[in-house]
Amino acid sequence: MKKMLVIGSLSIGLIPVLIVCCVVFVLLMVAVIVGGNNENAFPSGSFSTDMSVIAENEIPAEFIPFYQEAGEKYGIHWLLLASIHRQETNFSQNKTVSSAGAIGAMQFMDCTFVGWSYPTCNGLGNGGIPKDILMSPAQISKYGGYGVDGNGDGKADPWNEEDAIHSAAKYLSANMKGSTEIDKIQAAIFAYNHSSQYVNEVYDRFIGYTDGWEEFDGSVATTIRNGKAWPVPYTKQITSHFGPRWGREHKGIDIAVNGVEGQPIVAFTEGVITRSEYNLIYSDGKEVGWGWYVRINHGDGLETLYAHMNKQGVPVGKKVKTGEVIGYVGSTGGSTGPHLHLEFWINGVQKNPIPYVQDLLN
Image (cartoon, rainbow, N blue to C red; front, side, top):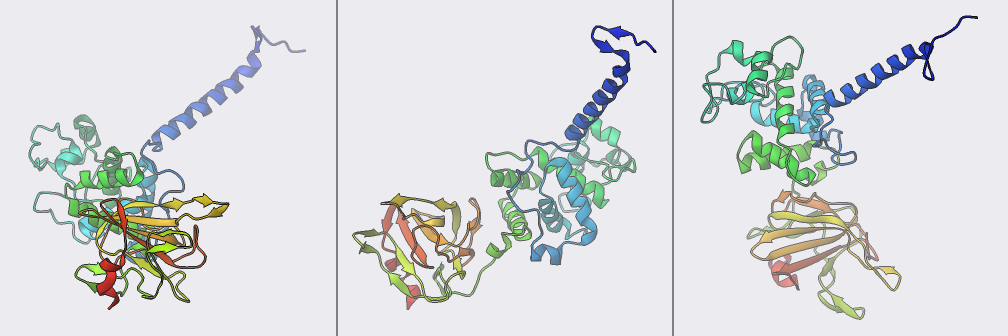
């Protein structure tokens, strides 16, 4: 019988197997690290990865694999990359140098692409960098830039869509700062172009491209006067007023009519979403909470609240315009039937909404 040398309790016959296992483990760990395991990556179940109808109609199919690959590698929602590509060059239909000197499919400043430690980089970042340096992965590594050779041809070319999109994903990933997902997205967009208007435009397009939110991106026909909109375009029928009701104070007005379920609810006036969540309160064993509701801060002490929606409304942090759709009529929470419960808060105190909407009812 063949003998085997034993070292301690380990047979030499097992050593090759263990070596293979160790190598596989190391390779798996490297794949996880290199593959974009990023603390800023979007958690599962947040913004949908599916395209909305708007996105399907706008985004060129040829670029989708680039967005998706780069997004997965750097932990960026791929539809955010599409939104920026659309904003910057209309999906590469206009790759001319910008007035500030930004170049390529995703409009990078050459100093950001190669790295700000390059000797001629200052000001806005137009360093007049020669192309042989601009597109050299070695030079980019040396100067700490964000240029990426996405297609593996040995060059990081800002005019090549695959390279440019991977470079944008790397830059956005480095600037995902904040405590919430929306904070991170908006911080990254702001880093790309230091303009509040730019942030609003790109973020709104991103929301419109993301399946599950596109129904909130837009407005519907409703009565609008003096910068104020009637919140339920489908009906103006008020079924319950502000004041005593069923032995307690009713802090708002209810708007309902047959067929109102699923109809859009719009913002009374422009503002920022501060709450978009499910409110659950029990009293004597019955649910009396708002269910799905949205709260908007309009500034100057005015806030409005829209309760009993059929599902979650627009996300927190979104800026909405007068008459913009924020959700849909439902019967969640402490509701006996489909309706909108509308509240007005003035400096933190609930007020009768009628004086504020009266001119919209006439």
